[in-house]
Figure 1 (cartoon, one colour):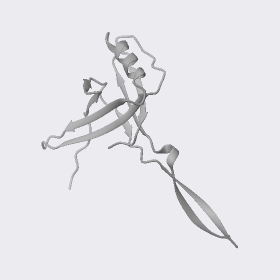
Figure 2 (cartoon, helix red, strand yellow):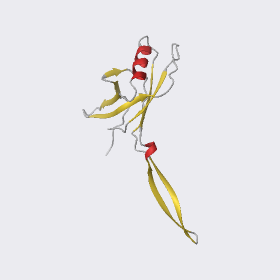
Figure 3 (cartoon, rainbow, N blue to C red):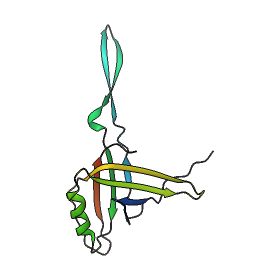
Length: 132
């Protein structure tokens, strides 16, 4: 059975739809990393020990925007919303189904550089609670 790809998501921040640069959206759901170590049993014998690295159990969202005239005010508002921004991502697939991902308690983490040119973009990096 074939599957449909997520290719053109709609992104909203705090219930406001934001036009992003196509193909710039990436996310990490915050599942975290698994640490795998070897426990020595002596005599060239070992067994693996697996553990969840809780420090990595945060979601990350990145995307790019175009440097529009209203972007500076939005960036200021998002930066001030420490741990309170909500990012929702939805896509309606050709078969009519829709998928949704929600990222809560997000903070805009990076120092935001604006590339003010005809083909410039602005990169935003967010982090917060695990994806739901």
